[in-house]
Amino acid sequence: MALLEMARGQYKKWLETENLLLLQGWKRDGLTDEQIAHNIGIRRETLYDWIKKYPNISNALKMGKEQANFIIENALFKKAKSGHVTAQIFWLKNNWRDKYNDSQLSVEERELLKHRIKDSELDTKIKEAKLKILQNGDGSAEDHLLELIETIESEDEREHGTE
Picture 1: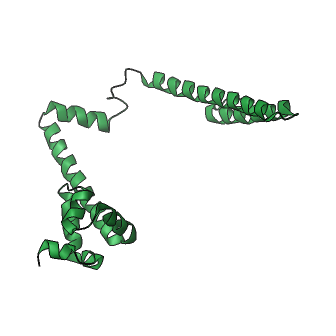
Picture 2 (picture 1 turned 30 degrees about the horizontal axis):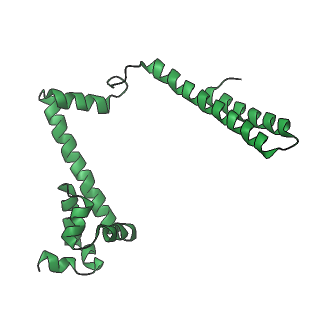
Picture 3 (picture 1 turned 60 degrees about the vertical axis):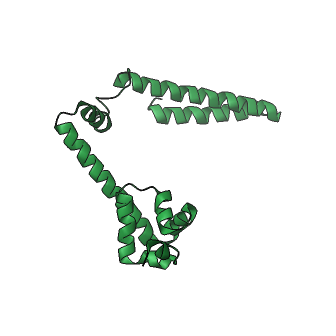
């Protein structure tokens, strides 16, 4: 039976073992979802619907993608071991990020920057709260503001472990 004739059939055909293996193989070989849908003779959106509705189809595609990732990972690792400098750099940057990253900041500087960003976000929340209270024109604005500020400060204390 020609592939195109099979493709025009129901999704049920694609739940058969040999067709699930075909889907898996296509994904393992690096085909995109659009290419796989084309091979089946359906639209990409239809394939996405099938993936949502039929776990066997979803699992076949996931397994094929995992196999492809393992194949590429193994090839990269072999290249890195054989002295291919680019492969070595790529491997280290992705597998030993604390030591080999492109950031010019030290680990301590990155942590300090994270805390500064968090502090800035909290200051923004406080300013937004003040503005909201002033816009509401509530007679007890000060009470609401103090309550909100205390909530934000408590959140900051929990985040940074300070009191």
